Amino acid sequence: MTELDTLAATRDAYDAIATVYQQQFQDSLRDRPLERAMLGAFAELVRSTDDGEGEVADLGCGPGYVTAHLHGLGLKAFGVDASPVMVALAQASHPGLRFEVGSMAELDIEDGLLRGVLSRWSVIHTPPQEVPAIVAEIARVLAPGGHLLIDFPATDGPHLETQSYDHVVATAYRWNPDRLAALLHDHGLAEVGRMTIEPLPTDRRQFQEVELLARKA
Image (cartoon, rainbow, N blue to C red; front, side, top):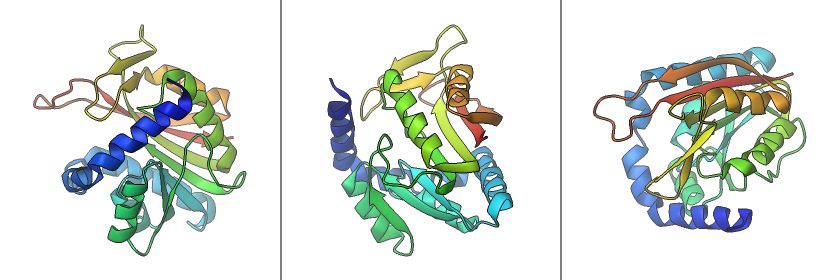
């Protein structure tokens, strides 16, 4: 399957479940205090560089509830998603914010325009060999000193760089945190910090979640 085929299949799958997805996850941050704390740190760092005036892109924004959360933290946030149905839901739910259809591998954003980028589980369906192109695109649109917060599921150990798993929507991939941090470094994004969240005993999938914060040199 080619890169375009993979993107199209994932887009179509999320189009099909968009309404159910919105209903299931629109309040998900409420029960995730650690993630809210990391989003708060991300927002504070972005605001500290330009008084919050620069734009922040939420890539893979889905129905827009995290974009709205960033807006509530004082950021000029907008959302981008490959799924037109997700974008339509986001626009209907948050009419005061901007949402647009787009691909993370080819963003319609000027070089160095953004002060921040959030990639919350949005690279999980991208085959590992295609992720460097997305990281390069993120680095392109970030201004010097801009920050990236990227979230992803971790592999089962340092001996595994990536692992695929059977996601309910489409095949997804886990990353070794050090490997992904090195990939960011290769594109001029230096790690600032990371948070590792352990799964709850009741979670269906028993692997760690990683939130990696990086800054463009």
